[in-house]
Length: 399
Ligand code: FES
Image (tube, helix red, strand yellow):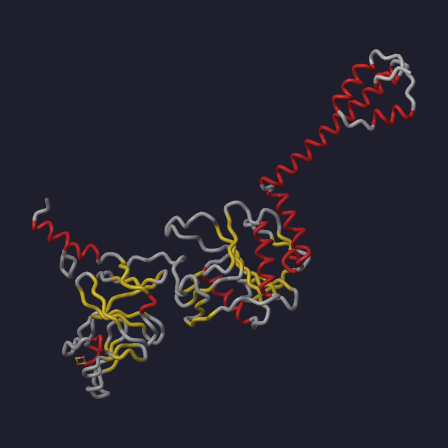
Protein backbone atom coordinates (compact mmCIF):
# COMPACT_ATOMS: atom_id res chain seq x y z
CA UNK A 1 0.00 0.00 0.00
CA UNK A 2 1.25 3.49 -0.79
CA UNK A 3 2.38 5.63 2.07
CA UNK A 4 0.59 8.94 2.53
CA UNK A 5 3.74 10.72 1.36
CA UNK A 6 4.06 8.65 -1.84
CA UNK A 7 0.38 9.08 -2.50
CA UNK A 8 0.77 12.83 -2.21
CA UNK A 9 3.74 12.76 -4.61
CA UNK A 10 1.79 10.76 -7.19
CA UNK A 11 -1.54 12.57 -6.96
CA UNK A 12 -0.64 16.22 -6.57
CA UNK A 13 -0.12 17.92 -9.93
CA UNK A 14 -0.33 21.61 -9.05
CA UNK A 15 2.53 24.07 -9.61
CA UNK A 16 5.70 23.17 -7.72
CA UNK A 17 4.82 19.47 -7.26
CA UNK A 18 7.02 16.67 -8.71
CA UNK A 19 4.18 15.09 -10.73
CA UNK A 20 3.03 18.53 -11.80
CA UNK A 21 6.54 19.25 -13.09
CA UNK A 22 6.56 15.94 -14.98
CA UNK A 23 3.16 16.50 -16.62
CA UNK A 24 4.09 20.04 -17.54
CA UNK A 25 6.81 18.61 -19.82
CA UNK A 26 4.12 17.59 -22.33
CA UNK A 27 1.31 19.05 -24.39
CA UNK A 28 -1.96 18.34 -22.60
CA UNK A 29 -5.39 17.99 -24.23
CA UNK A 30 -7.39 20.77 -22.60
CA UNK A 31 -10.79 21.02 -24.33
CA UNK A 32 -12.64 20.66 -27.63
CA UNK A 33 -11.86 23.29 -30.29
CA UNK A 34 -15.53 23.82 -31.13
CA UNK A 35 -16.19 25.04 -27.58
CA UNK A 36 -14.67 28.41 -28.46
CA UNK A 37 -15.94 30.83 -31.08
CA UNK A 38 -13.97 33.67 -32.64
CA UNK A 39 -14.49 36.73 -30.41
CA UNK A 40 -16.98 34.60 -28.44
CA UNK A 41 -17.44 34.10 -24.73
CA UNK A 42 -14.36 32.99 -22.75
CA UNK A 43 -14.65 29.71 -20.85
CA UNK A 44 -13.21 28.54 -17.58
CA UNK A 45 -10.92 25.51 -17.39
CA UNK A 46 -9.07 23.87 -14.53
CA UNK A 47 -5.95 21.94 -15.46
CA UNK A 48 -3.19 20.59 -13.23
CA UNK A 49 -4.70 22.47 -10.32
CA UNK A 50 -4.70 25.83 -12.09
CA UNK A 51 -7.80 27.91 -12.80
CA UNK A 52 -7.53 29.34 -16.30
CA UNK A 53 -9.60 31.24 -18.85
CA UNK A 54 -9.63 30.21 -22.51
CA UNK A 55 -10.88 32.23 -25.45
CA UNK A 56 -10.57 32.42 -29.24
CA UNK A 57 -9.41 35.79 -30.48
CA UNK A 58 -10.33 37.77 -33.58
CA UNK A 59 -7.74 35.89 -35.68
CA UNK A 60 -9.06 32.51 -34.55
CA UNK A 61 -6.12 31.86 -32.20
CA UNK A 62 -6.82 30.24 -28.86
CA UNK A 63 -5.48 32.05 -25.79
CA UNK A 64 -5.33 30.59 -22.30
CA UNK A 65 -4.57 32.92 -19.39
CA UNK A 66 -4.73 32.92 -15.61
CA UNK A 67 -8.24 33.32 -14.26
CA UNK A 68 -7.21 36.25 -12.05
CA UNK A 69 -6.33 39.64 -13.44
CA UNK A 70 -2.86 40.69 -12.27
CA UNK A 71 -4.28 44.09 -11.28
CA UNK A 72 -6.86 43.51 -8.56
CA UNK A 73 -7.53 39.84 -9.08
CA UNK A 74 -10.84 40.22 -10.86
CA UNK A 75 -11.95 37.06 -12.66
CA UNK A 76 -11.13 37.15 -16.36
CA UNK A 77 -14.23 35.04 -17.05
CA UNK A 78 -16.03 38.41 -17.11
CA UNK A 79 -13.49 39.92 -19.49
CA UNK A 80 -14.49 41.17 -22.94
CA UNK A 81 -13.05 39.19 -25.83
CA UNK A 82 -12.27 41.95 -28.32
CA UNK A 83 -9.84 42.74 -31.13
CA UNK A 84 -7.19 40.14 -30.44
CA UNK A 85 -7.27 40.01 -26.64
CA UNK A 86 -9.19 39.85 -23.36
CA UNK A 87 -10.10 43.11 -21.63
CA UNK A 88 -10.63 42.84 -17.87
CA UNK A 89 -14.14 43.98 -16.96
CA UNK A 90 -13.00 45.80 -13.81
CA UNK A 91 -10.49 48.49 -14.92
CA UNK A 92 -10.13 47.59 -18.58
CA UNK A 93 -6.60 46.25 -18.72
CA UNK A 94 -6.29 44.23 -21.93
CA UNK A 95 -4.07 41.17 -22.44
CA UNK A 96 -3.19 39.25 -25.59
CA UNK A 97 -2.61 35.50 -25.97
CA UNK A 98 1.05 35.75 -24.93
CA UNK A 99 0.00 37.36 -21.65
CA UNK A 100 1.33 40.82 -22.58
CA UNK A 101 -0.72 43.80 -21.42
CA UNK A 102 -1.53 45.68 -24.63
CA UNK A 103 -3.81 48.38 -23.26
CA UNK A 104 -4.19 50.12 -19.89
CA UNK A 105 -6.86 52.85 -20.17
CA UNK A 106 -6.10 54.30 -16.71
CA UNK A 107 -2.54 55.23 -17.77
CA UNK A 108 -1.66 58.10 -20.04
CA UNK A 109 -0.39 57.46 -23.55
CA UNK A 110 3.18 58.24 -22.50
CA UNK A 111 3.13 55.66 -19.70
CA UNK A 112 5.11 52.47 -20.22
CA UNK A 113 3.68 50.84 -17.11
CA UNK A 114 1.68 48.36 -19.17
CA UNK A 115 4.95 46.96 -20.54
CA UNK A 116 5.83 45.83 -17.02
CA UNK A 117 2.59 43.92 -16.52
CA UNK A 118 1.86 40.38 -17.69
CA UNK A 119 -0.80 37.86 -17.02
CA UNK A 120 0.17 34.19 -16.86
CA UNK A 121 -0.50 32.70 -20.30
CA UNK A 122 0.13 29.27 -21.79
CA UNK A 123 0.98 28.20 -25.33
CA UNK A 124 -1.80 26.45 -27.23
CA UNK A 125 -2.08 24.39 -30.40
CA UNK A 126 -5.07 22.79 -32.10
CA UNK A 127 -4.93 19.25 -33.40
CA UNK A 128 -7.81 17.11 -34.62
CA UNK A 129 -10.44 19.29 -33.02
CA UNK A 130 -8.70 19.48 -29.64
CA UNK A 131 -6.95 22.42 -28.01
CA UNK A 132 -3.62 21.34 -26.53
CA UNK A 133 -1.90 23.29 -23.80
CA UNK A 134 1.77 23.47 -22.91
CA UNK A 135 2.15 24.49 -19.26
CA UNK A 136 5.86 23.78 -18.88
CA UNK A 137 8.79 26.13 -18.58
CA UNK A 138 10.61 25.32 -21.83
CA UNK A 139 10.82 28.20 -24.29
CA UNK A 140 10.39 25.80 -27.18
CA UNK A 141 7.89 23.08 -26.27
CA UNK A 142 8.26 19.65 -27.90
CA UNK A 143 6.52 19.56 -31.31
CA UNK A 144 3.19 17.92 -31.99
CA UNK A 145 2.83 15.87 -35.19
CA UNK A 146 1.43 18.13 -37.86
CA UNK A 147 0.26 16.13 -40.88
CA UNK A 148 -2.91 14.70 -39.42
CA UNK A 149 -3.71 17.76 -37.38
CA UNK A 150 -6.69 19.83 -38.37
CA UNK A 151 -7.73 23.44 -38.48
CA UNK A 152 -10.90 22.37 -40.24
CA UNK A 153 -13.33 20.30 -38.17
CA UNK A 154 -13.23 16.66 -39.38
CA UNK A 155 -16.14 15.21 -41.37
CA UNK A 156 -17.50 18.58 -42.44
CA UNK A 157 -17.40 20.51 -45.72
CA UNK A 158 -15.14 23.17 -44.21
CA UNK A 159 -11.63 24.00 -45.38
CA UNK A 160 -9.28 26.67 -44.07
CA UNK A 161 -7.28 28.81 -46.45
CA UNK A 162 -5.04 31.57 -45.10
CA UNK A 163 -6.87 31.39 -41.78
CA UNK A 164 -10.28 31.84 -43.37
CA UNK A 165 -12.94 29.16 -43.25
CA UNK A 166 -14.36 28.11 -46.61
CA UNK A 167 -17.48 26.00 -46.93
CA UNK A 168 -16.81 23.68 -49.87
CA UNK A 169 -20.10 22.85 -51.54
CA UNK A 170 -20.60 19.58 -53.43
CA UNK A 171 -19.19 19.86 -56.95
CA UNK A 172 -21.40 20.13 -60.02
CA UNK A 173 -20.90 18.44 -63.37
CA UNK A 174 -18.45 18.61 -65.18
CA UNK A 175 -16.13 19.39 -62.25
CA UNK A 176 -17.47 16.39 -60.33
CA UNK A 177 -17.13 13.92 -63.23
CA UNK A 178 -13.59 15.10 -64.02
CA UNK A 179 -12.74 14.70 -60.38
CA UNK A 180 -13.95 11.11 -60.50
CA UNK A 181 -12.08 10.46 -63.80
CA UNK A 182 -8.76 11.57 -62.33
CA UNK A 183 -9.38 9.44 -59.28
CA UNK A 184 -10.18 6.38 -61.47
CA UNK A 185 -7.15 6.80 -63.72
CA UNK A 186 -4.74 7.57 -60.88
CA UNK A 187 -6.16 4.68 -58.83
CA UNK A 188 -5.54 2.22 -61.68
CA UNK A 189 -1.99 3.49 -62.20
CA UNK A 190 -0.90 3.80 -58.58
CA UNK A 191 2.10 1.65 -57.63
CA UNK A 192 2.41 -0.67 -54.65
CA UNK A 193 3.09 1.29 -51.50
CA UNK A 194 0.96 4.27 -52.54
CA UNK A 195 -2.70 5.18 -52.17
CA UNK A 196 -5.02 7.58 -53.93
CA UNK A 197 -7.42 9.77 -51.97
CA UNK A 198 -10.18 12.18 -52.93
CA UNK A 199 -10.83 15.36 -50.96
CA UNK A 200 -8.35 14.46 -48.22
CA UNK A 201 -7.59 17.34 -45.89
CA UNK A 202 -3.96 18.36 -45.71
CA UNK A 203 -2.53 20.82 -43.26
CA UNK A 204 -0.29 22.97 -45.41
CA UNK A 205 0.61 25.74 -43.01
CA UNK A 206 -0.36 27.30 -39.70
CA UNK A 207 -3.30 28.96 -41.36
CA UNK A 208 -4.32 26.58 -44.15
CA UNK A 209 -6.00 23.20 -44.06
CA UNK A 210 -7.62 22.16 -47.33
CA UNK A 211 -8.23 19.11 -49.51
CA UNK A 212 -6.73 18.72 -52.99
CA UNK A 213 -9.23 17.11 -55.40
CA UNK A 214 -7.05 13.98 -55.72
CA UNK A 215 -3.93 13.09 -53.74
CA UNK A 216 -1.39 10.27 -54.09
CA UNK A 217 0.43 9.48 -50.87
CA UNK A 218 2.56 6.68 -49.36
CA UNK A 219 0.55 3.95 -47.59
CA UNK A 220 3.11 3.49 -44.83
CA UNK A 221 2.63 5.65 -41.75
CA UNK A 222 5.07 8.40 -40.99
CA UNK A 223 7.81 6.83 -38.83
CA UNK A 224 7.82 9.75 -36.41
CA UNK A 225 4.22 10.87 -36.05
CA UNK A 226 2.67 7.44 -36.85
CA UNK A 227 0.04 9.41 -38.78
CA UNK A 228 -0.23 9.44 -42.54
CA UNK A 229 2.56 10.73 -44.72
CA UNK A 230 2.24 13.86 -46.80
CA UNK A 231 0.98 13.36 -50.34
CA UNK A 232 3.61 13.23 -53.09
CA UNK A 233 1.25 14.22 -55.91
CA UNK A 234 -1.81 16.46 -55.82
CA UNK A 235 -4.37 17.14 -58.57
CA UNK A 236 -6.75 20.08 -58.70
CA UNK A 237 -9.62 20.59 -61.13
CA UNK A 238 -10.33 24.18 -62.14
CA UNK A 239 -13.74 24.75 -63.69
CA UNK A 240 -15.59 27.87 -62.67
CA UNK A 241 -13.17 29.28 -60.12
CA UNK A 242 -10.38 31.69 -61.03
CA UNK A 243 -6.96 30.13 -61.64
CA UNK A 244 -5.71 32.14 -58.67
CA UNK A 245 -7.42 29.67 -56.31
CA UNK A 246 -5.56 26.52 -57.47
CA UNK A 247 -2.45 28.69 -57.86
CA UNK A 248 -2.60 29.74 -54.23
CA UNK A 249 -3.23 26.16 -53.18
CA UNK A 250 -0.41 24.78 -55.35
CA UNK A 251 2.08 27.25 -53.90
CA UNK A 252 1.12 26.17 -50.39
CA UNK A 253 1.21 22.46 -51.20
CA UNK A 254 4.67 22.75 -52.75
CA UNK A 255 5.92 24.81 -49.80
CA UNK A 256 4.59 22.10 -47.48
CA UNK A 257 6.66 19.51 -49.39
CA UNK A 258 4.22 18.00 -51.90
CA UNK A 259 6.49 16.84 -54.72
CA UNK A 260 4.28 17.57 -57.74
CA UNK A 261 1.04 19.51 -58.15
CA UNK A 262 -1.15 19.33 -61.26
CA UNK A 263 -4.19 21.29 -62.33
CA UNK A 264 -6.73 20.23 -64.97
CA UNK A 265 -8.25 23.24 -66.73
CA UNK A 266 -11.66 21.94 -67.64
CA UNK A 267 -12.75 24.58 -70.10
CA UNK A 268 -9.46 24.67 -71.97
CA UNK A 269 -8.90 20.91 -71.82
CA UNK A 270 -5.32 21.37 -70.62
CA UNK A 271 -3.15 19.94 -67.89
CA UNK A 272 -0.79 22.21 -65.96
CA UNK A 273 2.02 21.27 -63.60
CA UNK A 274 3.39 23.59 -60.94
CA UNK A 275 6.96 24.65 -61.63
CA UNK A 276 9.17 25.55 -58.69
CA UNK A 277 11.62 27.18 -61.08
CA UNK A 278 9.20 29.81 -62.33
CA UNK A 279 6.87 29.74 -59.32
CA UNK A 280 3.98 29.24 -61.69
CA UNK A 281 2.20 26.76 -63.92
CA UNK A 282 3.69 25.03 -66.97
CA UNK A 283 1.54 23.28 -69.58
CA UNK A 284 1.99 19.52 -69.82
CA UNK A 285 1.71 18.51 -73.52
CA UNK A 286 -1.51 16.57 -74.17
CA UNK A 287 0.39 13.87 -76.08
CA UNK A 288 2.85 13.24 -73.25
CA UNK A 289 2.67 11.11 -70.11
CA UNK A 290 3.30 11.72 -66.41
CA UNK A 291 6.26 9.59 -65.40
CA UNK A 292 6.49 9.20 -61.67
CA UNK A 293 7.51 6.62 -59.08
CA UNK A 294 3.95 6.67 -57.74
CA UNK A 295 2.67 5.05 -60.96
CA UNK A 296 3.21 1.55 -62.40
CA UNK A 297 3.41 2.97 -65.92
CA UNK A 298 3.62 6.48 -67.37
CA UNK A 299 0.15 7.97 -67.03
CA UNK A 300 -0.93 9.44 -70.37
CA UNK A 301 -2.12 13.04 -70.03
CA UNK A 302 -4.92 12.26 -72.50
CA UNK A 303 -6.39 9.87 -69.91
CA UNK A 304 -6.96 12.85 -67.61
CA UNK A 305 -8.40 15.09 -70.30
CA UNK A 306 -10.47 12.69 -72.39
CA UNK A 307 -13.05 10.41 -70.72
CA UNK A 308 -12.92 7.89 -73.58
CA UNK A 309 -9.13 7.50 -73.22
CA UNK A 310 -9.50 7.06 -69.48
CA UNK A 311 -11.09 3.61 -69.86
CA UNK A 312 -8.40 2.46 -72.28
CA UNK A 313 -5.55 3.64 -70.08
CA UNK A 314 -7.16 2.17 -66.96
CA UNK A 315 -7.27 -1.20 -68.78
CA UNK A 316 -3.61 -0.82 -69.85
CA UNK A 317 -2.59 -0.05 -66.29
CA UNK A 318 -4.49 -3.07 -64.96
CA UNK A 319 -2.70 -5.28 -67.48
CA UNK A 320 0.58 -4.05 -65.99
CA UNK A 321 -0.58 -4.50 -62.39
CA UNK A 322 -2.41 -7.79 -63.06
CA UNK A 323 -4.77 -7.97 -60.08
CA UNK A 324 -6.03 -11.56 -59.40
CA UNK A 325 -9.08 -11.58 -61.76
CA UNK A 326 -6.98 -10.33 -64.67
CA UNK A 327 -4.14 -12.72 -63.88
CA UNK A 328 -6.68 -15.57 -63.77
CA UNK A 329 -8.23 -14.55 -67.10
CA UNK A 330 -4.82 -14.29 -68.74
CA UNK A 331 -3.73 -17.66 -67.46
CA UNK A 332 -7.00 -19.29 -68.60
CA UNK A 333 -6.47 -17.83 -72.03
CA UNK A 334 -2.92 -19.12 -72.08
CA UNK A 335 -4.06 -22.56 -70.95
CA UNK A 336 -6.71 -22.68 -73.68
CA UNK A 337 -4.05 -21.73 -76.23
CA UNK A 338 -1.80 -24.54 -75.06
CA UNK A 339 -4.60 -27.15 -75.23
CA UNK A 340 -5.55 -25.98 -78.69
CA UNK A 341 -1.93 -26.07 -79.79
CA UNK A 342 -1.48 -29.61 -78.46
CA UNK A 343 -4.64 -30.79 -80.27
CA UNK A 344 -3.51 -29.27 -83.54
CA UNK A 345 -0.14 -30.98 -83.16
CA UNK A 346 -1.80 -34.36 -82.69
CA UNK A 347 -4.17 -34.00 -85.66
CA UNK A 348 -1.20 -33.16 -87.84
CA UNK A 349 0.58 -36.21 -86.43
CA UNK A 350 -2.38 -38.42 -87.45
CA UNK A 351 -2.11 -37.13 -91.01
CA UNK A 352 1.66 -37.55 -91.04
CA UNK A 353 1.45 -41.21 -89.92
CA UNK A 354 -1.16 -42.00 -92.59
CA UNK A 355 0.91 -40.29 -95.23
CA UNK A 356 4.08 -42.10 -94.14
CA UNK A 357 2.25 -45.40 -94.41
CA UNK A 358 1.07 -44.49 -97.93
CA UNK A 359 -2.61 -44.41 -97.00
CA UNK A 360 -4.72 -42.16 -99.12
CA UNK A 361 -6.54 -39.35 -97.30
CA UNK A 362 -9.49 -37.68 -99.00
CA UNK A 363 -10.07 -34.00 -98.52
CA UNK A 364 -13.23 -34.73 -96.48
CA UNK A 365 -11.27 -36.97 -94.10
CA UNK A 366 -8.50 -34.39 -93.85
CA UNK A 367 -11.02 -31.69 -92.94
CA UNK A 368 -12.59 -33.93 -90.30
CA UNK A 369 -9.18 -34.72 -88.75
CA UNK A 370 -8.03 -31.11 -88.74
CA UNK A 371 -11.38 -29.90 -87.38
CA UNK A 372 -11.35 -32.27 -84.40
CA UNK A 373 -12.03 -30.76 -80.98
CA UNK A 374 -12.12 -33.87 -78.79
CA UNK A 375 -8.63 -34.65 -77.48
CA UNK A 376 -9.51 -38.23 -76.42
CA UNK A 377 -10.90 -38.97 -79.87
CA UNK A 378 -7.77 -37.62 -81.57
CA UNK A 379 -5.62 -39.79 -79.27
CA UNK A 380 -7.61 -42.81 -80.45
CA UNK A 381 -7.13 -41.79 -84.10
CA UNK A 382 -3.42 -41.48 -83.53
CA UNK A 383 -3.21 -45.03 -82.18
CA UNK A 384 -5.33 -46.39 -85.06
CA UNK A 385 -3.31 -44.51 -87.70
CA UNK A 386 -0.45 -46.96 -87.13
CA UNK A 387 -2.56 -50.01 -88.03
CA UNK A 388 -5.50 -49.05 -90.29
CA UNK A 389 -5.59 -50.02 -93.98
CA UNK A 390 -7.93 -47.22 -95.00
CA UNK A 391 -8.23 -43.70 -93.60
CA UNK A 392 -11.94 -44.08 -92.78
CA UNK A 393 -11.09 -46.89 -90.36
CA UNK A 394 -9.74 -44.20 -88.10
CA UNK A 395 -13.33 -43.30 -87.29
CA UNK A 396 -14.48 -46.92 -86.83
CA UNK A 397 -15.89 -47.04 -90.36
CA UNK A 398 -14.88 -49.97 -92.56
CA UNK A 399 -16.81 -49.35 -95.80
S1 FES B 1 -8.72 44.06 -11.87
FE1 FES B 1 -8.41 43.74 -13.94
S2 FES B 1 -7.96 45.64 -14.69
FE2 FES B 1 -8.22 45.98 -12.60
